[in-house]
Length: 296
Image (cartoon, rainbow, N blue to C red; front, side, top):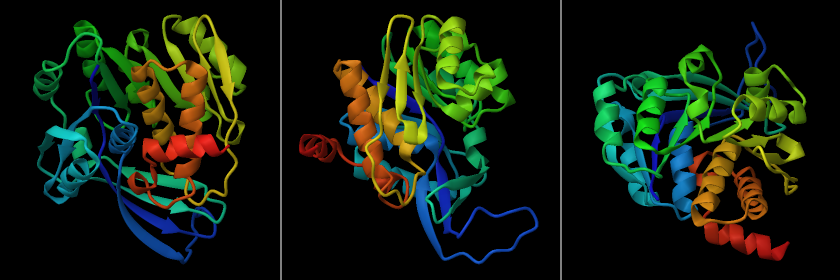
């Protein structure tokens, strides 16, 4: 089983601040770091570090070839990364003294996918392979339709949640991987159990992973539900926590692990990631995750 992740690549500008900036406010920052990121690439790196064979697709500008170097470093297949006219996507990320973040996103070349490109890439994959998507690239409805026709499993992280998702046929999604904010935006409910109830009602064949910050995570389908508490740590940067969880969760599915064990491994990986600065560099390798689990 192979994983194709057609996802975003962003140059992250990470500013350390006392608090998230308010309208009309000017605030001096206490630090600036430049990282490679984007939900798509972060999740590909998480999958690779978890031991999965993952193929990343998407568009970069002439300023984005560091992503190719990162793929080489972490073992991500980069054959489907292409160059487009314009600037690579980038973000401006504020991280406050409590490790909470606020993200301003410029799509850049992430919004330059074409239907012919999608056709070319998906043609190389087979029934049962996984297509992983986030909402930081264009052509999402087309990719879902094409992958579904091919018999691929589709995992969707509906983030950021916006009107573009209205055109996606959600009944074709195999796995929803989302946080409680996105869950509320999809269902209109804020309580986790009601979010789960509604998603299961709307899409009874789907599997749902709902991450809840300090309250852990819930897995649900039409037959079972499991709750996984967090591993308490001193967080310094939560930017890649969800992406790490997504990568490790899908890795566990591919390995055929039991859901409770997958959730535990994913939560542990996320707990390690939030103790480190940056997105990709913060994601732990599987050996470290398993070793940490043995110590608990």
